[in-house]
Image 1 (tube, rainbow, N blue to C red):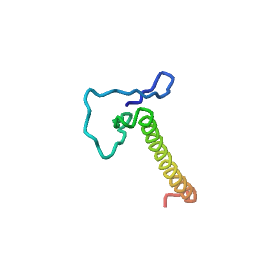
Image 2: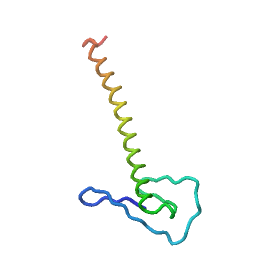
Image 3: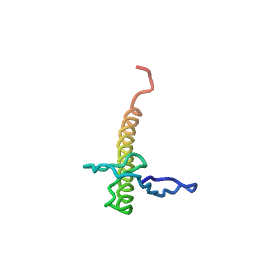
Image 4: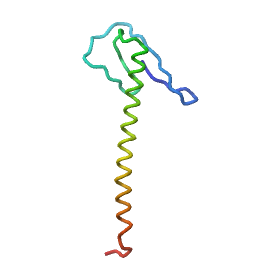
Length: 87
């Protein structure tokens, strides 16, 4: 399965069937916009899994950015208390 983006910026999922079966793995994790999943999951469950994983990754990025922005803002606020002389 792969996620693609159309000209309007909307995502859509496409299932690419493999010619031959692969070995069963213990864990299935998406890599970027691609995801190999066991056939018994079905495409609906696999698409849901892929999208929920990508949403979690983006939420983690936002959370990390908010923490970093907060730390930077506190540092900037402390610098505002410095004197303007170069001592």
